Amino acid sequence: MSYFRKLTQETTRLTQMLGREDKWLIVINADPDAMASALALKRIMVHRVAEVGIAHVNEVKRPDNLAMMRFLRIPTQMLTAQVRTQYDHFAMVDSQPHHHPDFKSCSFSIVIDHHPITAASPVTARFVDIRPDYGSVSTILTEYLYNLRIRPGKLLATALVYGIKADTQSFERHFLEADVKAFSYLTKSADMTLVRKIIHSEYHRRWLKFFSKAFRKMRFVGQKGLFVYMDTLESADILVMLADFFTRVHGLSWNMLCGIVKKQVVVIFRGDGIGRNMGQMAAKLFGDVGSAGGHRGAARAEIELAKFGDKSVEEVLYRRLTGSKLPGKEKCPLTA
Ligand SMILES: [Mn+2]
Image (cartoon, rainbow, N blue to C red; front, side, top):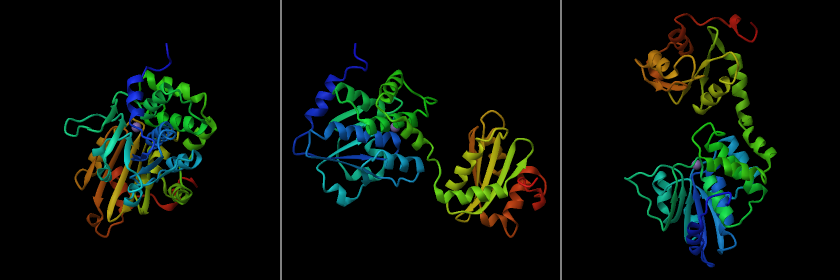
């Protein structure tokens, strides 16, 4: 019995579609699973066609994704009209054509994905393999490689390992036996030091100043809570990044990170999912003045800055949370 399921029909149909003169472009919405799958499909195509390229429609910003692109040398470029005209065939992995407006500019012949199939947007490409039960498309592509007797090289195996890890959140989210098998098969060829390096690329250097500010401004609330007001920021992503960071501190069970982003007061809540319910907390604290809600572990509120009038935003937020006045500077937790 072979290690993975047999895909003879699929691989035959797939390889029959690849012509010697073809120029294929693999289009993705870049995340680890999509990039790894694109790299695998490129590997399948490369000796069978004239040219294969990879292009993404989204701006890649997350530091781990940038680290993956750099360390695993993922040859992807932004999809532009100019890039598009250099190719005559289009494939898509880890997405479906209706998932992003920029996908509409290409006519896809191959779609390999694991997102749910919707009746409203059926996928009509010549070759379609969509398996919503799979934890990652990296797993599906690993099965294709295996069936085609292509042993993935170090960088490709590493990319696929990270793709599976990212989409299954290291097997904390939905996965199949096939995902585990693919993972274990790939780790024989992958470089786990590179995987760790990518996982640990969590922060941009330019973010360090926000940590420094957050440490200066943090205020403990009760035994297990943390309140941090970050003043004006360019993006709420900074609040999310900091809130996620503070969930990793033992002894803290929830936090509330606040700032002003484009004339909106944004409040990000993170909890450990065991104690206080963040969605309820957000709604209770700010439901009367803005949009507020979320689920047990994560929530968000947004209030128009104008509603604060000339009052100190930090003061108002802290008072709403605790019912008391903002403690003075002498209560700074780092000097306490
Ligand atoms: Mn995926």
